[in-house]
Image (cartoon, rainbow, N blue to C red):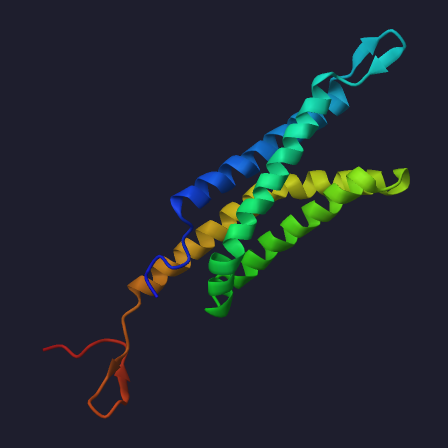
Length: 169
């Protein structure tokens, strides 16, 4: 396995950043307009006209993110999981994405009492996801760098481990 076996391709990194960025920015913009951007209409306060388009873009970003995630599962996730690399933060990232999907579905299809809870959970996890993803990347790169710096084990001619360093000549 090469040094960069767990690294995403440039296209995957760009697609993931673009789709998550679109979802984050449109979701946050929608929330801000929903909370603070109501406008005065003929019959009182009304939602801002941009809210509907922001939700459409948010959904498009979410679908794009799921497509990118689908490209990561068979190679990046599966290979790293089998190699026992960066499992904890990877599992947290996947769990947060799964919860975003579930709460997003609930926001679209659930009855009113559940929507308030789903909305709050979706907002909090959506704001946390970028930080958790950055932590996953940083932890993975740091551990990979430390593994490269570790001295390789040295075995004698009969296969016994002598030391973690090669003998000095």
